[in-house]
Image: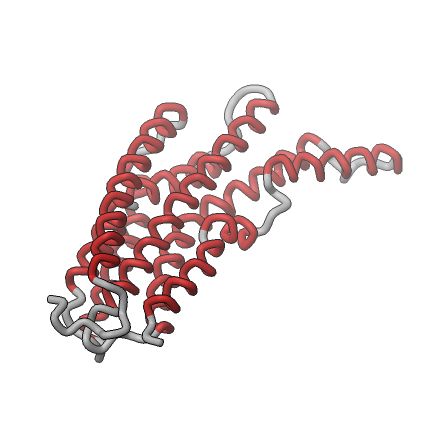
Length: 253
């Protein structure tokens, strides 16, 4: 398979190491997602069929996007890399299910009990969502590394732009699962802040300022003052320099 390796590409051992790492990471994300699903549904009942639709659509879209390279002009023999990427996509299904389950839990309304309980639940769900984003971001990074290394083992390797687009597609799939849950958490956090520190019916300036300041601090605690791009920078976009460096290392000089 490697007798026509590009003379300036990485040695086959680099791809082999990345492939093994991707396989191990896929197994880890599968286990992690299943455990988080068990923990979440134990406290907040969510049925599989309630989240299966959008998760299946994202997974199918990812598998189709990977295999579309078979019909594009360029090097052949990418089924080894594509198979690993498909496995990584399918292994991420439980994590995607947890993300959509978070959305359903938040959209169902506030939990019963005191308002402090709502703050605790929102904080826990946001931390869970951020950990899932970081885990999926690591998989996207490894997928892009592995695909870039495998591409450079071919007689006519694909361009750096193609490899970066490939990584971008993986990021889009993760964002498609992350954004609905993030949006639901933002709405619920803003509603809670307005409930705890109302402003509409106040006339006293000092009370208005105090409530506005307290509401702003609560938004900061709940992460409601952060845009989705800021969260993605910590989970996905932070990998961009690494991806660019890896692509540059794989390209012929």
